Image (cartoon, rainbow, N blue to C red):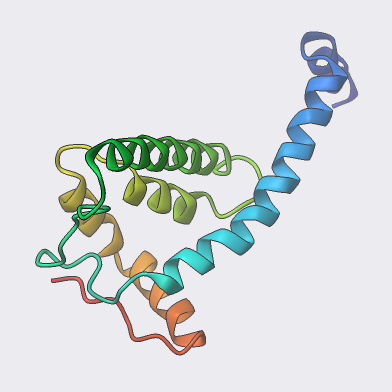
Length: 140
């Protein structure tokens, strides 16, 4: 085991390991706060097909465009942080779901519904919502 660690530290500098550790701790703490806050604030019918998704529709087109770019960038950050958290500490899958919900792409609604409808995810999200006095998600 010691030779393995020696080989790894020769390939990857100690500063990179320290950076990854700091990122991992900050991402873990951040997702412990952000993911539940987002999931609790979602409308109960957010993942239902009839829920309108006109984000910033009543704003000036330039402001809406900037807002959509910022929202997509934040969504990508959440998604890739979730991917990283699959191997590092953190709520990887839930963070990826939050990231997907922020990113705009064709077929997004169907993908979200498919993921959130999985019993493991749905029960976890609804248990969290119940803890904060929110009604369960409506999926259809």
